[in-house]
Image 1 (cartoon, rainbow, N blue to C red):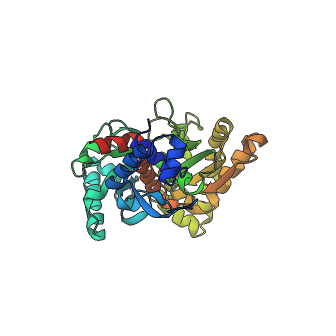
Image 2 (cartoon, rainbow, N blue to C red):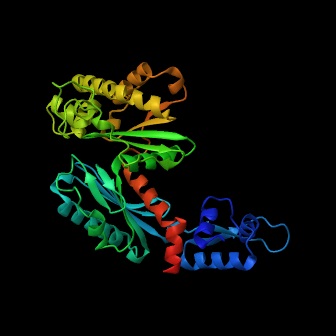
Image 3 (cartoon, one colour):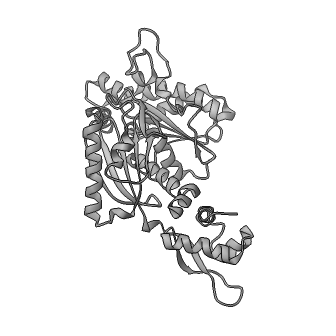
Length: 379
């Protein structure tokens, strides 16, 4: 017999919008459906909004998810920049706060800022913290989503095995979810612009390089949740530049934003973007060549996954077509035509908000899952 959480899923997906449709779809009795719907209404998961078409008699009430009744707090933690945001349970933004905060300062200072920013967002908007249903954070490293810990990151010294979720839960006693940044960005792009696309791969190029993959509407993580570490594919020889991981010749050490910054004598990938946007010939040429280098690796990924969309995100997406042009050249040159005939290679549509949106969607899917909803209703 369907639980209240499973009934909510039927309402969420739009296949059942009235009590009558729920009865017809599930075969459950009128009293059972009334019980499930009343519990969801009382808990604030759904609302009655307007009336549906009537076949005679009183028009039925239409049931919708009451996304605005619940809040989500999310943080996108980059190597040099951090964003905290407050959204509703449909990942719609309410308020944001930005800071130029280096993640290598360590988990203590960074998480203190995140929790403080969450508090400030709630205070500024006048929202009741009791309405917060979940918190999500994305980081530039591999994570253990079960324990809420960072398992490995070459950009985050001092973070390995740190109990990130437990630290945030001291301030917010709700589900705390941790995700890799490129994976969160891929989910955000798919949710916002590519839900009709059967497979999407997002490549984030900022300080380093990472990737997120969405297949048939689900994030692909790999057997050990290590899928997407494309930045450490080796393309150079033993005499190539040393990567942050300690190896030589990783594509991130040759085509990542920090590598380009060092070549150009500037501090960060954002400085590289500023030079490209200003029309600096050396920066433009180096950026296009970096795109070609990464494109060689991506051509292999295209042959393996046959994605419908290859999306460039991160700082280097802000170079307009320059980095993207290099990627396109190599992907089309090194891939078979039938693997790319329907492939779109584009810049991110969300820009710097992709991680925030994807992390909010991740929390939304968890909070509204049948298991979480049923546990909350029985708690």
